[in-house]
Image 1 (cartoon, rainbow, N blue to C red):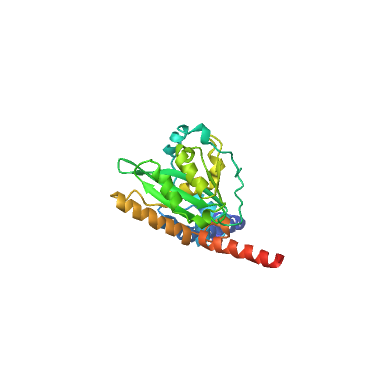
Image 2 (image 1 turned 90 degrees about the vertical axis):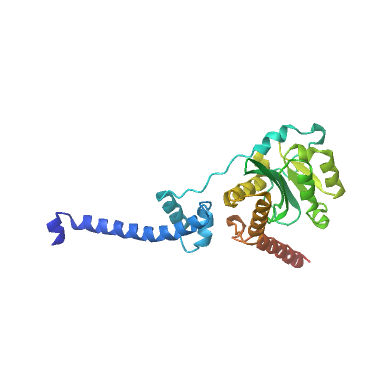
Length: 272
């Protein structure tokens, strides 16, 4: 009777009703997604949200984020790369890693690099050494200058036992071609590997880490260098122990490191 009064077909009414129900359900799910998105200050993409809403289909999350224009913040370019030209050609090493990023044994292959963070009217520089297999940040250092101590102190932060016979990959920046750094690598009995000139994807794991760090680190609220150092330290702890990663079985780097070590030991026992 109501369809006759409104001059609409029964099929048209039920089609509209189904669409209305979908919109209402979308809005409830949108509120869940929006709360997580806002809590991350707009830094989380669909993967991070999916890990916090495991019962919601990832395609639905993508659709709702697109529908309501929930876009994660875009990463900035790294001006440090402009200093790569200042390298010593006689200390450039071949690309031994050759994009073999699918490592399964922790503490065998490291990657390292330097990035910048806009700070007050200048920049702060952060040097990081990361284990490629687990994603764990092994050591980091922060400075207001780009002198050699930025990378040498970072290297000193890794236990010599972990460095033994490990491969460490970097770009061809002047820090990593500097003879002082090369000598330190040799003393630790490590193998040095370098990306091809201007090919940042050769060091993708560390580039990805820096991108996520800049998205998630609340550095703009820092009022002095001490405050920035504290924020960076808190983030490194969060990244290693709390930040679950989609490509690492939804585990944190420390959890995935222990998982890989246990897997390796199990295989050894079976083989023996």
